[in-house]
Image 1: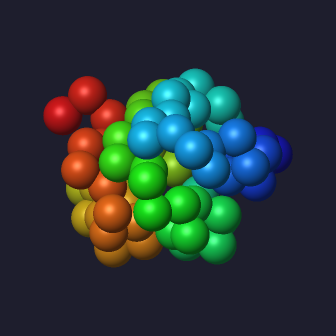
Image 2: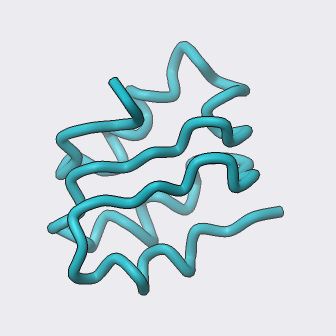
Length: 75
């Protein structure tokens, strides 16, 4: 199982992250790990189980968890 905990530490001074294809199983860690990073504006999570298993609700859940985002994936 992949974790996004390492992402939060590396993003403290960046505005985007590309973590596509990293086998992230669900979105539960987004709020805890990434919400405090106010400079995070872009997040690519494509090709992760969290995106592939919930195509209809995925983007809305990410937006609710990370309201500071301007762009999610390539859309």
